[in-house]
Image 1: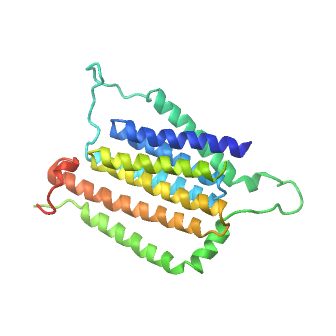
Image 2: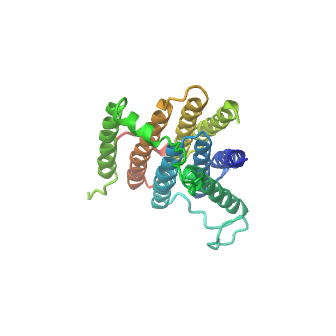
Image 3: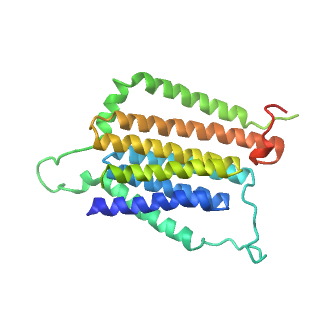
Length: 175
Length: 100
Protein backbone atom coordinates (compact mmCIF):
# COMPACT_ATOMS: atom_id res chain seq x y z
CA UNK A 1 0.00 0.00 0.00
CA UNK A 2 2.70 2.44 1.03
CA UNK A 3 4.91 1.37 -1.85
CA UNK A 4 2.04 1.70 -4.32
CA UNK A 5 1.22 5.19 -3.10
CA UNK A 6 4.86 6.21 -3.35
CA UNK A 7 5.21 4.63 -6.78
CA UNK A 8 2.18 6.22 -8.34
CA UNK A 9 2.82 9.68 -6.93
CA UNK A 10 6.45 9.47 -8.10
CA UNK A 11 5.29 8.18 -11.49
CA UNK A 12 2.87 11.08 -11.92
CA UNK A 13 5.44 13.63 -10.75
CA UNK A 14 8.20 12.30 -13.02
CA UNK A 15 6.07 12.08 -16.17
CA UNK A 16 4.38 15.45 -15.69
CA UNK A 17 7.66 17.14 -14.75
CA UNK A 18 9.40 15.83 -17.86
CA UNK A 19 6.46 16.88 -20.03
CA UNK A 20 6.51 20.33 -18.51
CA UNK A 21 10.26 20.70 -19.10
CA UNK A 22 9.44 19.93 -22.71
CA UNK A 23 6.41 22.17 -22.95
CA UNK A 24 6.98 25.32 -20.94
CA UNK A 25 8.17 28.52 -22.57
CA UNK A 26 9.70 30.12 -19.52
CA UNK A 27 13.16 28.87 -18.62
CA UNK A 28 12.79 29.31 -14.86
CA UNK A 29 9.54 27.36 -14.97
CA UNK A 30 11.22 24.59 -16.96
CA UNK A 31 13.96 24.45 -14.33
CA UNK A 32 11.42 24.17 -11.50
CA UNK A 33 9.65 21.40 -13.46
CA UNK A 34 13.01 19.64 -13.75
CA UNK A 35 13.34 19.90 -9.96
CA UNK A 36 9.92 18.25 -9.54
CA UNK A 37 10.90 15.55 -12.05
CA UNK A 38 14.10 14.82 -10.09
CA UNK A 39 12.08 14.53 -6.87
CA UNK A 40 9.93 11.96 -8.68
CA UNK A 41 12.99 10.01 -9.79
CA UNK A 42 14.19 9.99 -6.17
CA UNK A 43 10.84 8.51 -5.17
CA UNK A 44 11.21 5.83 -7.86
CA UNK A 45 14.67 5.00 -6.46
CA UNK A 46 13.08 4.61 -3.03
CA UNK A 47 10.52 2.14 -4.41
CA UNK A 48 13.39 0.16 -5.95
CA UNK A 49 14.98 -0.32 -2.49
CA UNK A 50 17.84 1.95 -3.55
CA UNK A 51 17.81 4.17 -0.48
CA UNK A 52 21.34 5.49 -0.83
CA UNK A 53 20.65 6.46 -4.44
CA UNK A 54 17.43 8.22 -3.44
CA UNK A 55 19.21 10.24 -0.77
CA UNK A 56 22.05 11.08 -3.17
CA UNK A 57 19.52 12.15 -5.80
CA UNK A 58 17.75 14.43 -3.34
CA UNK A 59 20.98 15.98 -2.07
CA UNK A 60 23.03 16.29 -5.26
CA UNK A 61 20.34 17.13 -7.79
CA UNK A 62 17.78 19.06 -5.77
CA UNK A 63 20.38 20.75 -3.63
CA UNK A 64 23.14 21.27 -6.15
CA UNK A 65 22.49 20.97 -9.85
CA UNK A 66 19.08 22.65 -10.08
CA UNK A 67 20.19 25.55 -7.86
CA UNK A 68 23.28 25.92 -10.06
CA UNK A 69 21.05 26.00 -13.14
CA UNK A 70 18.80 28.61 -11.55
CA UNK A 71 21.86 30.74 -10.76
CA UNK A 72 23.03 30.43 -14.36
CA UNK A 73 19.57 31.41 -15.67
CA UNK A 74 19.49 34.46 -13.41
CA UNK A 75 23.06 35.46 -14.32
CA UNK A 76 22.42 35.23 -18.05
CA UNK A 77 19.01 36.94 -17.90
CA UNK A 78 17.30 34.02 -19.55
CA UNK A 79 13.82 34.79 -18.26
CA UNK A 80 13.06 38.46 -18.87
CA UNK A 81 9.44 38.47 -19.95
CA UNK A 82 8.05 40.64 -17.20
CA UNK A 83 4.77 41.22 -19.06
CA UNK A 84 1.92 38.76 -19.09
CA UNK A 85 -0.27 37.98 -22.07
CA UNK A 86 -2.53 40.97 -21.50
CA UNK A 87 0.37 43.43 -21.62
CA UNK A 88 0.35 44.12 -17.88
CA UNK A 89 3.49 43.98 -15.72
CA UNK A 90 3.60 40.79 -13.70
CA UNK A 91 3.47 40.99 -9.93
CA UNK A 92 5.82 38.66 -8.04
CA UNK A 93 3.51 36.14 -6.48
CA UNK A 94 3.43 32.64 -5.08
CA UNK A 95 2.96 30.96 -8.45
CA UNK A 96 -0.04 29.63 -10.28
CA UNK A 97 -1.97 26.39 -9.96
CA UNK A 98 0.46 24.19 -11.83
CA UNK A 99 3.40 25.37 -9.77
CA UNK A 100 1.47 24.82 -6.56
CA UNK A 101 0.45 21.31 -7.70
CA UNK A 102 4.08 20.51 -8.48
CA UNK A 103 5.16 21.87 -5.12
CA UNK A 104 2.59 19.91 -3.12
CA UNK A 105 3.28 16.67 -5.00
CA UNK A 106 7.05 17.18 -4.67
CA UNK A 107 6.72 17.74 -0.94
CA UNK A 108 4.58 14.61 -0.58
CA UNK A 109 7.02 12.48 -2.59
CA UNK A 110 10.04 13.83 -0.70
CA UNK A 111 8.35 13.14 2.64
CA UNK A 112 7.39 9.59 1.60
CA UNK A 113 10.91 9.00 0.27
CA UNK A 114 12.57 10.13 3.48
CA UNK A 115 10.11 8.02 5.46
CA UNK A 116 10.89 5.01 3.29
CA UNK A 117 14.65 5.53 3.69
CA UNK A 118 14.48 5.90 7.45
CA UNK A 119 11.80 3.24 7.89
CA UNK A 120 14.15 1.03 9.86
CA UNK A 121 14.33 3.64 12.57
CA UNK A 122 10.59 3.81 13.09
CA UNK A 123 9.53 0.16 13.13
CA UNK A 124 10.15 -2.20 16.02
CA UNK A 125 12.16 0.24 18.06
CA UNK A 126 10.33 -0.69 21.23
CA UNK A 127 11.08 -4.36 20.92
CA UNK A 128 14.01 -5.69 22.80
CA UNK A 129 15.83 -7.39 19.98
CA UNK A 130 17.61 -5.42 17.29
CA UNK A 131 15.32 -5.02 14.27
CA UNK A 132 16.30 -6.36 10.92
CA UNK A 133 18.46 -3.77 9.25
CA UNK A 134 18.18 -3.69 5.50
CA UNK A 135 20.09 -0.84 3.92
CA UNK A 136 22.26 -0.72 0.85
CA UNK A 137 24.63 1.85 2.30
CA UNK A 138 27.06 -0.64 3.85
CA UNK A 139 27.20 -2.82 0.73
CA UNK A 140 27.69 0.17 -1.56
CA UNK A 141 30.47 1.46 0.68
CA UNK A 142 32.21 -1.90 0.69
CA UNK A 143 31.89 -2.18 -3.10
CA UNK A 144 33.27 1.32 -3.56
CA UNK A 145 36.46 0.62 -1.66
CA UNK A 146 37.02 -2.93 -2.88
CA UNK A 147 35.83 -3.73 -6.41
CA UNK A 148 35.37 -0.23 -7.75
CA UNK A 149 38.16 1.61 -5.97
CA UNK A 150 39.87 2.70 -9.19
CA UNK A 151 36.71 4.33 -10.57
CA UNK A 152 36.14 5.94 -7.16
CA UNK A 153 39.57 7.56 -7.12
CA UNK A 154 39.34 8.61 -10.77
CA UNK A 155 35.96 10.23 -10.08
CA UNK A 156 37.59 12.30 -7.32
CA UNK A 157 40.18 13.51 -9.83
CA UNK A 158 37.35 14.25 -12.28
CA UNK A 159 35.50 16.32 -9.70
CA UNK A 160 38.68 18.26 -8.84
CA UNK A 161 39.27 18.95 -12.54
CA UNK A 162 35.65 20.06 -13.02
CA UNK A 163 35.91 22.38 -10.01
CA UNK A 164 39.11 24.08 -11.17
CA UNK A 165 38.00 24.13 -14.79
CA UNK A 166 34.64 25.74 -14.01
CA UNK A 167 36.32 28.39 -11.86
CA UNK A 168 38.89 29.15 -14.58
CA UNK A 169 36.38 29.27 -17.43
CA UNK A 170 33.80 31.45 -15.70
CA UNK A 171 36.37 33.91 -14.30
CA UNK A 172 35.75 37.47 -15.51
CA UNK A 173 38.65 38.76 -17.58
CA UNK A 174 39.87 42.31 -17.74
CA UNK A 175 40.67 43.33 -21.27
CA UNK B 1 4.97 -2.40 -10.30
CA UNK B 2 6.93 -4.61 -12.61
CA UNK B 3 10.00 -3.82 -14.63
CA UNK B 4 7.78 -2.56 -17.46
CA UNK B 5 6.60 0.48 -15.51
CA UNK B 6 10.10 1.57 -14.61
CA UNK B 7 11.28 1.11 -18.19
CA UNK B 8 8.31 3.11 -19.48
CA UNK B 9 9.09 5.96 -17.07
CA UNK B 10 12.70 5.82 -18.20
CA UNK B 11 11.61 5.85 -21.84
CA UNK B 12 9.42 8.90 -21.32
CA UNK B 13 12.29 10.70 -19.55
CA UNK B 14 14.69 9.83 -22.35
CA UNK B 15 12.22 10.88 -25.05
CA UNK B 16 11.51 14.21 -23.34
CA UNK B 17 15.25 14.82 -22.97
CA UNK B 18 15.92 14.14 -26.65
CA UNK B 19 12.97 16.33 -27.67
CA UNK B 20 14.17 19.16 -25.42
CA UNK B 21 17.68 18.89 -26.86
CA UNK B 22 16.37 19.04 -30.42
CA UNK B 23 13.56 21.56 -30.04
CA UNK B 24 14.98 24.18 -27.69
CA UNK B 25 17.25 26.96 -28.91
CA UNK B 26 18.52 27.97 -25.49
CA UNK B 27 21.79 26.51 -24.24
CA UNK B 28 20.63 26.14 -20.63
CA UNK B 29 17.45 24.39 -21.81
CA UNK B 30 19.63 21.93 -23.73
CA UNK B 31 21.54 21.28 -20.50
CA UNK B 32 18.19 20.56 -18.81
CA UNK B 33 17.50 17.97 -21.52
CA UNK B 34 20.88 16.35 -20.90
CA UNK B 35 20.04 16.07 -17.20
CA UNK B 36 16.77 14.28 -18.11
CA UNK B 37 18.64 11.81 -20.32
CA UNK B 38 21.21 11.04 -17.62
CA UNK B 39 18.41 10.46 -15.13
CA UNK B 40 16.71 8.03 -17.51
CA UNK B 41 19.95 6.02 -17.80
CA UNK B 42 20.50 5.95 -14.04
CA UNK B 43 16.90 4.88 -13.42
CA UNK B 44 17.36 2.02 -15.89
CA UNK B 45 20.45 0.81 -14.03
CA UNK B 46 18.63 0.86 -10.68
CA UNK B 47 15.55 -0.90 -12.11
CA UNK B 48 17.57 -3.71 -13.70
CA UNK B 49 19.49 -4.14 -10.45
CA UNK B 50 16.22 -4.59 -8.56
CA UNK B 51 14.54 -6.97 -11.01
CA UNK B 52 17.32 -8.97 -12.66
CA UNK B 53 20.03 -9.55 -10.07
CA UNK B 54 20.46 -8.24 -6.59
CA UNK B 55 24.14 -7.35 -6.61
CA UNK B 56 24.67 -3.64 -6.36
CA UNK B 57 26.85 -2.93 -9.39
CA UNK B 58 23.94 -1.08 -11.02
CA UNK B 59 23.69 1.20 -8.00
CA UNK B 60 27.41 1.96 -8.28
CA UNK B 61 26.85 2.78 -11.94
CA UNK B 62 23.94 5.12 -11.11
CA UNK B 63 26.09 6.78 -8.46
CA UNK B 64 28.83 7.50 -10.98
CA UNK B 65 26.24 8.79 -13.44
CA UNK B 66 25.06 11.26 -10.78
CA UNK B 67 28.67 12.32 -10.09
CA UNK B 68 29.39 12.85 -13.78
CA UNK B 69 26.12 14.77 -14.23
CA UNK B 70 27.13 17.14 -11.44
CA UNK B 71 30.57 17.73 -12.97
CA UNK B 72 29.03 18.19 -16.42
CA UNK B 73 26.50 20.71 -15.12
CA UNK B 74 29.22 22.75 -13.40
CA UNK B 75 31.51 22.92 -16.44
CA UNK B 76 28.63 23.40 -18.90
CA UNK B 77 27.15 26.29 -16.95
CA UNK B 78 30.59 27.89 -16.62
CA UNK B 79 30.93 27.73 -20.40
CA UNK B 80 27.42 29.20 -20.79
CA UNK B 81 28.24 32.12 -18.46
CA UNK B 82 31.52 32.78 -20.28
CA UNK B 83 29.67 32.66 -23.61
CA UNK B 84 27.15 35.16 -22.29
CA UNK B 85 29.97 37.50 -21.23
CA UNK B 86 31.34 37.42 -24.77
CA UNK B 87 28.22 37.41 -26.95
CA UNK B 88 25.51 38.85 -24.64
CA UNK B 89 23.28 35.94 -25.68
CA UNK B 90 22.63 32.29 -24.84
CA UNK B 91 20.97 31.42 -28.11
CA UNK B 92 22.44 28.31 -29.73
CA UNK B 93 22.57 29.88 -33.19
CA UNK B 94 25.00 32.53 -31.95
CA UNK B 95 27.56 29.87 -31.07
CA UNK B 96 29.19 29.51 -34.44
CA UNK B 97 32.85 30.23 -33.66
CA UNK B 98 35.22 28.42 -31.36
CA UNK B 99 37.30 31.52 -30.67
CA UNK B 100 36.63 35.21 -30.84
